Length: 154
Figure 1 (cartoon, helix red, strand yellow):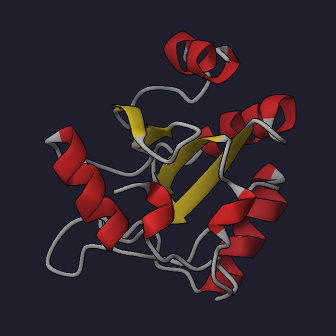
Figure 2: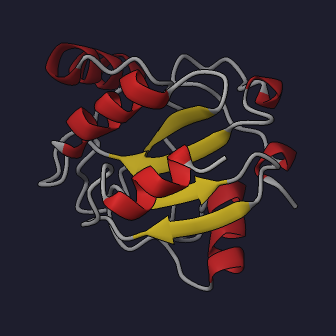
């Protein structure tokens, strides 16, 4: 299985066309607007501005699984991210990353890594073929050296 084998919609409800991401490294991050880690949006946006394009992309995946820290509607989430952090990388629809209603992508990530999402802003590195290349805890800053090295490596 690869990331491209799953269905996921953008925040506006339109299906993500994985062809737009094939051949790119993807940083997949579950996000929330009312979390102590929410300021990580700023570094994610900086990474997007520095490296986003033909070889790298970020996808933010809103979830409300941890202490109800993403209660907003799609419109509220989009506005919050734009106004507060200038987010220009794509955001998906809000999904469950744990529990009985876990989204199939996060079930796959759990099976592949042997661990489930522990909190908002857990980071998954997806290689150019759509396979998991690694993951980092929520507390790991998006611009941490191991993540930067992975992005820059051809």
